[in-house]
Amino acid sequence: MKILVINGPNLNNLGKRDESHYGAESFSEVITSIEQFSKELGIEVKFSQSNSEGELISFIQKEASTSDGIVINAGALTHYGLSLKDSLIDAHIPLVEIHISNIHQREEYRRTSVVEPVAIGQVAGFGTSGYLYALELLINYLENAI
Image 1: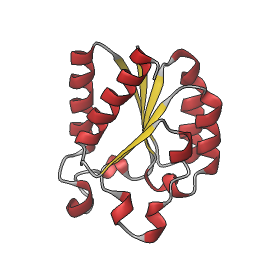
Image 2: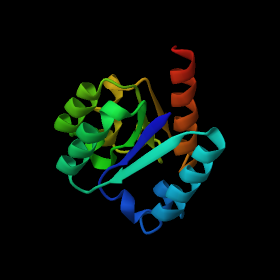
Image 3: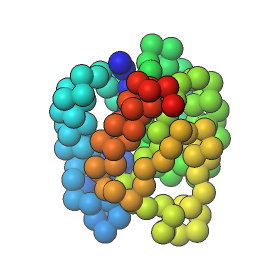
């Protein structure tokens, strides 16, 4: 099983951002944690992080046909990335949306997600552990064809 793990703008700055929302863990530590967890689960993960919506779309278009699912933290693109949303729809594979902070308890503009309607679920507010929860949820979904 192959899962794409996609991160949008500014997530490469984890560990340097507002710790009250994003914690102290660096982006490389998050990636290492996901890699270790994916080995335990016996799955392959392929990562992409970009501050450019177009690069994320190109990654999805290139990789979706050989992948089983997507875990995505679209960052600020969550709220207005309609072309990213279209590429996720066109991928025709299940996805779980993840947010480190609870976007539903933050500023009003952060509470709307263009990704959520095309996701099988959303994990928000559990810190960087949310990536691991999202992987588990997606794998359970794929294995049980819910």
